[in-house]
Image 1 (cartoon, rainbow, N blue to C red):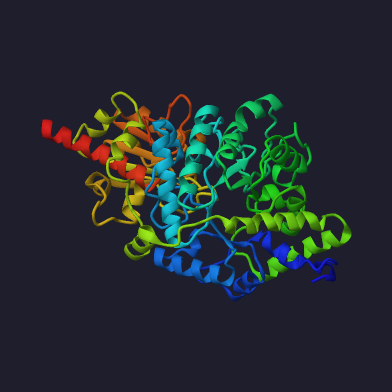
Image 2 (cartoon, rainbow, N blue to C red):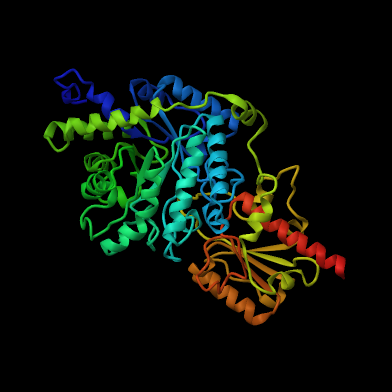
Length: 518
């Protein structure tokens, strides 16, 4: 690497550069290049679902990483709802944000945040990229939806603060995201650059409210978004914008914690410029810790580090900015964290929880939207005839996690097996390339289950055809439904395992009651 990495004052610039980098890696074992860079001062790693085999395996992996660099950040995208890495093979056992927002009990939200934190402490993670602080004001949003606490700024702000307090009380750093707000978008920044052309007054009064609340309760990090806000910066997405990060977040909002970039491999950040250049721009704009992406390699990390060193050598990037970023990241290690205790001794050994905590199911069920007559139609014959499973492409943030009631079949719980109505019904799968079978030929009642049904033309068409052909159709949206609920006879506002189990039991109880009456 360029000689500029050795500063004239003796500062090891290479170490500072490495401290700002947070890559992912492939597989359940730490590769040699990663351990070598950790020993040199690499900022840490981001754990993805592909890195997790079991709680015990993850605990061993994180211990190995922290042994190589005790100051390292071990981050994970664990929102405790639809987005989960710790429960990637089965779905998270907690109610997600949208359900918590509908229940609107701050103590419950705080308790769920703490439960997520305790599970992460048990497996050795130090930071979670959560909570999602976005206000889902656009029902067409393809990437936020039920990850949000709701569509009203005050509610989202209250619950963002409570979740931050909960997870940090367990000793895990929160990272409120995606600053300055990804809720009013209809584009996925993993795939393109969303544009949010809001008046500054709307941004201040709506989008920024949850971030102010998170800052007020001491969130240790804030994650940026790859969105363009022309009213603030018509050229750079937020992650790469000095006006938004240095001027707005540091200056106007007074935030002094760690600023983490959203993954730089996303098109909204590196599209057209590449990850090394995006890394340079993100550091210059004010990011301290650069989330690179997943399945990274040692060669990629060296290329990124070299690009940053070259930017320092050319004067594009001040070495003081790199040193400041590195110091903030290292400062995270000064936070007192649990080193063991009941959670750490129990969870890796016996497995992580599969269901909601006792007594919570009734409150989750009460948060569902259930249209008048929907359960009556579903239970009319005492059993479900056909389940139409609507398959849509999961956004990259969610990935291939088992979802909705189907998660109960994908990963079974010996103590809470999937209800009979779910396993005994005929199932047909519907996607954009698979036509709906003849509606008249399906055994009834017919239950259509999918996410954000109103956003997918093929799903809307299928529902309209089914409704036109028969009267025993019930639609179940486990995502964020349209405002008019036109395609959601039942809406659960989440597809996590915990929410799905509650829905499945609600249906089973209704079927049992119908059978007893008849």
